[in-house]
Amino acid sequence: MPLSHEKTTQIASILLCLSSVTGCDYLEKNPRETQNNKKSDIVLETSIEDDIVIPVVINNKTLNFLVDTGASVTFIDEKIANTITRPLLSSEIPQNYRQEFSNVTTVSGRLEGHQFALLKPTTFVIGTKEINDSDIWVSLDLSLLTQSMGTKIDGIIGIDTFRRFNWKVDNDQKKVIISDTLPSASDYQACTGYDDSYNRMPQLWFKYKNNDVAFRMDTGADHSFVSNEFLNYVKENKLSLELLSSNEPMAEAGGLTKSTQYILQDFIFNGLPLNKMEFSDNQEGKFHVGMDFLSRFKRYTFIPSRMMFCYDAESIEKNSIPHERSIAIRYMDGSIEVFYNNNEEIQKYGLKNGDKILTINNTTYSPEKIKTVRKLLLQEPKGTLALTIQRENQVMDIVL
Image 1 (tube, rainbow, N blue to C red):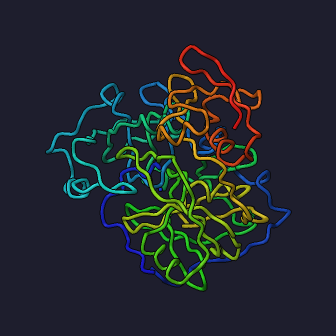
Image 2: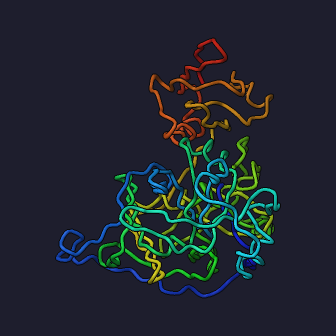
């Protein structure tokens, strides 16, 4: 099960090798030393939903940026790029970037030169910190990302900025705290070291059938994925593998893509079994874990200067991952709507592409809750979802 490390620039993940584990230690909390009685230098504290989206200020305007460890640098939506800065002249591009951006990969392939442009960086502000020393920015069409996430995404914070700060995420309280001060490992149930290198995502280690398997930590991806070679190994050895029926495309930097999805078992992270976990296949030989993995923790923190990942979690095990329906939805013009589905497949639910979802079981969901809506459509038992939809000018009720 070899893991081929990426040798080309990772532009924006957006979606989705055997060696010894390093730095896996369980650490007990010291009850006398808590977060409240230590010096805290908070750069930014903000509410989040399912992804790490933070406010960034450029030219006195507040914009929404996704924090994506799968992006190598800062990205700006091409629709606003020319209002913020200008393209870099060829003579202004350092030689190393010229080489790196000549072959730009996404999760499932590569970007062509006409799909992005290199920009001259300008000053931007995250909370209390001003950042004015970036080497290069990239403009890219982020409209599919906005559609997927239910909120306008103006840009992406890449791994170069991610490494400047410590990131504490509380899934229970739905917030992220960005700080200069290093969190103490004693504040968390457990910590483990991760591997890191230039222009790469943090790399965590998992156990699978007594083998050590490396996964890149991709905060810009909803789902996790493994290489086709790994899946073939699982099939050939008749290990636990469940094929899923999915109609939903995934959004990434190069556009919409579809992949085959599976449920795998027997992965263990730092001594904690995951039991069932959903993975997509990847033809580029990549192993990534996405936000679906991080959502299993009560809270977690990345400490880049120590290359340490700490967390609280009594269990990260999932014994079931229901898949009742496959209905793709998007955010468009202030609404959540059914879209990007095969027409024949979606008709069996009584739905059509373009139907706006007004309520589910008499509850109205804001666009920011689009991932909650996806989960309801995917997992709730048949016959339990009463949808009120708008089809053109007609309002109608449908039970799924």
